[in-house]
Image: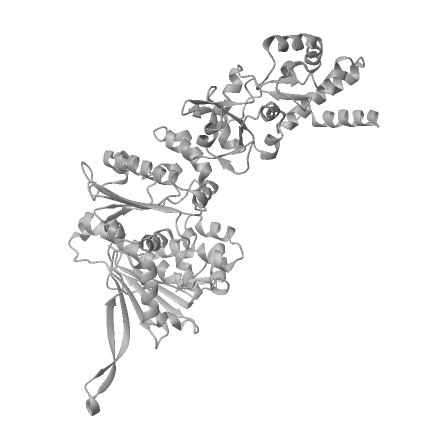
Length: 620
């Protein structure tokens, strides 16, 4: 018998299951039954599409056996089964990055941590909350040899060949002495009805029961084997909505999503006509932990006429909806459709388009706390959708939220235009990576003075790419305040007069700063700060910054325009300053401090610090 060490993270996980997580031990039955159901789904597909298995008289079922004398519980299925490599890959090592991510996201709170178990695809290991020893005996469909995987959860496992007549898996669980509650038939029945009632295969409970036969002196009491089905075994999504309660939907969600929380919302639709299909989708309250990983696990299962086809196709919904959990069941797709054909299938493309719209409409309807929760969890991926899904762009723009210069929390475009200037029809925004820096930007001064709302977009990595391509929302044009003139009450003549008055000063500052600035001019946007920097909207390279960012390339450096505030005391004194060295130092400080105000760095930080120190010394 070969002994193997568990992978490091698995060993840590087993120790955690054995010693720490006791808040919701019953979920181990849910997880193992769910795994058994998946195995049955996979063999059911083979039995209908693979010539090797078509002749087999097969009917899928899950069995749970209670043995009080042995203090053991056994869960079995006649599904696809596993061979030696499968057992070692699925049970002895990390499946993708699920287990490692699970360990990284532990909080130390046992109740919260136990709820993470299923979300990471590590549900099998939940058995060690109650198990003293576990044997997994499995035979893969189409193969002759069966194998047994054994472990007591202390760091090692063994795999050896064994004899098993038919394909499928049996999990023998030797319970700890204080876990006898899971040998009570009523307790197990309650757990199955709570979590697994709508598993599409019969779940049979097998147990020994004391039975008395005869009467009076002839009465004989003996133990007999009993077997009864304890679930409805009807695919929930196939039932009419009128027959289902909210509780039914929620418990089904917990089974397929391995989540202990209720979903934010769900939508159950049946479409009939040229195409016939049923969908059941859920929006989780908490985003999947792998949502921003390239190897994320998709959350939607595809069925054809109730036959499971796949649960790892990332094309069933747009990538930005990868947080959605649920079912698609088509009546029109062929059962033996290949993965390659799925990608190009027009029927599936129509289902995807219909489903996407329905999901977005359901999200748009969220109100109050549910809407806030959704935005907190998924606002960033909605922005991703705005960039990639032009067909549903308007719906996505209705959903996305941004911070505002005039109020706390997040606001929608609809809220913005409801209080904006309906004649100008412009939505003003500023992008960057630090909310505090953006809120204190000198560029906002004129907007604050004019009481004009500006959207604060501090997710620079996404916003600088996505926002410029939005263009407009309901005929309102989006305007980046770093590239446009600020609101101003002065007339054209007044501005020309001020510019002429300070023409000599702006020229001298430009000569001092040289190629570091494209232009120096009098500002109409500043009310408190002495200077600010803005982009040149006519610079083609500045306009291509978003494209370079999208391609992952370094954004080309383009000279900025320096604006100075003619009403600021520093500028007035600078205009009459005769000390050339001091003038140069102040000119550079005007530029570098303006850059810092926008979250940019001075080109020469050492020189900037030296100039500030020199001026501070003179001021003492």
